[in-house]
Image (cartoon, rainbow, N blue to C red):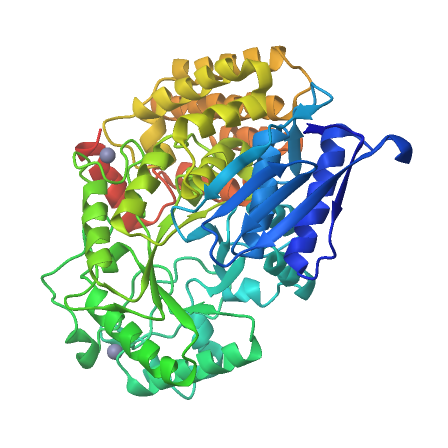
Length: 606
Ligand SMILES: [Zn+2]
Ligand SMILES: [Zn+2]
């Protein structure tokens, strides 16, 4: 079968919206690949058949005489089959949201008759993003990119879901993407401004005093919780959850997740749930507080069982990290429950299941406990394939490790992989996201990585491989273990390494001077060089406020690009400026307990 610009794609009448989208996408990809069709007379017809077969295992694409069959059990898998076909056979590379790269060097594509793609199935059922920012116009290219890469899940804050336009919900729904309205939400279910006057008893007692909770919606790291053992409070949460689900009948998954940080209630009843000698772990940044798994898991169990009586179809997620990282003794992960397991401040120089890593081995052990606790419920991994937010586009070259980690997750019985992400830093971490999606759908590591590099860099893919290898080497040289925050990387690497990656990026650009992504790699590595130089001057000769401000000014003058999330960079540089003004040592974000961990890492991990 020959595909070229004379081909006319035809299908039977399609009633399903997702199948219609699949056909429209196929037609539009054909035009992007071969150009607009020739005049009618010269056209050859290809019949496109979308077969929904309940017994189908994964999706398949079969070429027959004059026809192409896309077969799967569900419509969304047919859509995936179209995109996979486009990448494997039409020369597309869906690396970046809003940018469909395609190799058009030859005017025609020849397909052999027979099975082109066979039984493609996911390794993990839930695959997606954690969105910690409001929906915007950018959410359209992101949703489009997710479908192209077979991602099907977004976890976001309720306050953002509530502002999501209906048309956008529809856009995600037709692409088979479920949205979980959740994340940190104690203060959404029980807003202080509504409850505090009448029910101060709903809020935590800390250091012998009832807290007066903040009502600032933008505050980070609240470290203020509820008095979670109070039965009236639990009943109120269940009531609010039920009414929320009735108001949003499209929602299938909500969550019950503490406000960010610590601050659990110390009233007499709550205190009976803590062992004041059992502290959290150093690995999970919580050895300064006692464990809260027992009190939190007990609340989850009770709330889910109450809600299930009213709304048996609704799933409730909760999370596991910091001082409630492992399940409490005897806890069962039942039907309607899913835990998001977050290896916060994991080491990125070892894979998650590396027994020799003092940080990750604890996370792997905790994860195995969750998997043992499964009794009808689900386990998702909540990852940070961008370091963490305050790693501000410093390198995390994890796109190959992701395959090994996801295979391991699959073998162990994990149900999903979700990662935090931002569109504005795609140049730094896009390859991680792209390869995460491939890995979660069972792709072969070598083939996927090579195809990605060829799709993005064309003939120069080997040089691009050297660029990423140099970047990976730089990160690995930061020490046996590396927890991703700027101080750890900059204090243990040399400026020459950054200059080397910058030179390689320039070499790539020289070979294709108009390539937008290569231009961004040059700017990204220049950012790294300048940041590292400033960091070294701060430690060697000292710098002044104006030096940080000059760096910040340079950043803000960068041409529009996908290198940095400016709001986060400004926050971190603001913390640096504060240190210069007050004489405090600049380590991170000037939170005392966090700085203590960084000082301890300085001794134990370097
Ligand atoms: Zn209490
Ligand atoms: Zn490590």
